[in-house]
Amino acid sequence: MSKLVDNFGRQIAYIRLAVTDRCNLRCQYCMPAHGIDIVPKQELLTFKEMYRLIRVLTELGVTKVRLTGGEPFVRKDFVGFLEMLSYNDLLDAINITTNGALISKHITEIERLGKVKNINLSIDSLQAVKFNEITRRNAFDEVFNTMGLLEKSSLNLKLNVVVQSGINTDEIKDFVRFTKDRNLAVRFIEEMPFNGKGQREMQENWTFNKILNEIKTEFEVTEIQSEKSSTSRNYAIENHRGTFGIIPAFTRTICNDCNRIRITSTGTFKNCLFDDGVFNLRDFIRNGASNDDLKKLFLSLVKAKPANGFVAEANRTNGDVSESMSTIGG
Ligand code: SAM
Ligand code: SF4
Image 1: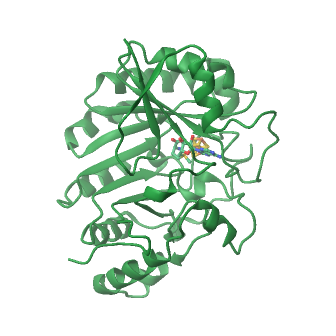
Image 2: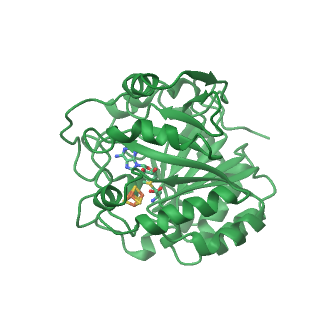
């Protein structure tokens, strides 16, 4: 079987798929207060189209999928899609990134599917007022409650915290403290300009090193050996049940081992978060492409995967990075 290998010898094994561009929250670092211009429904990939694209990719060596958005649970019958995807015997794991505001009633059903392994829950503050300010909606109680339910479930729970200068940086150590008695991993993410407008004013630049140094002022940390392709560097603290990690999303020091590709909710293929879209898969399949055509296409598209996110950004033709993460699929 042919495998997806890029020109730098990196084998692609992970696909991130945005199942929608819609969202029920309005996080300040992700989109403007009025939201983004969502596309007409017929421009979104259907679940059948998504299933087919993923099936073809798994036949080329992809073993994991992360479903994201927008908010995946906003899409009607998303849980039905999870079930459909679970039948793909070539997939080892289905992971989901969610804001958690709509998921509590689905947790038992998702556990039952077996193939959904990891849930990344976005929660940028442990303080209700601040959380609601960041997300511009009043969802804190529901999200916090869902976090408790997920922690007790059989699903592996990670918390995504976007580090926002002057907004939640005073809570970095609170989040680490939070892992003391909880079976979860907190992952701090460097903020990127994917917010619908472009680079935000920042008092300070909270890079990977700055975040780690802040944590080291209170805790003695030990690095944990992570999978080579991991997006985060991960750490343990003695007597803490949980762990923490830092994702250098903006300083991009992890690109060498990248094994990921992306498909947006409208079917745009991306080799890198920072590129501006390489190919429209939706139109290709709607114009009658066969699975063999798709395979040939994927094998050639990954050959153009840029060395790293800086090269991808430099090669953009649609201007500076400013699109909302909700349209790309974070
Ligand atoms: N709605 C879901 C959620 O919030 O988890 C899934 C989509 S969201 C775009 C995926 C991840 O991207 C979230 O963890 C979110 O915090 C992160 N994200 C969004 N905008 C970002 C930005 N400008 N910089 C860094 N991370 C961002
Ligand atoms: Fe929605 Fe997630 Fe973006 Fe927040 S980060 S606005 S929850 S897509």
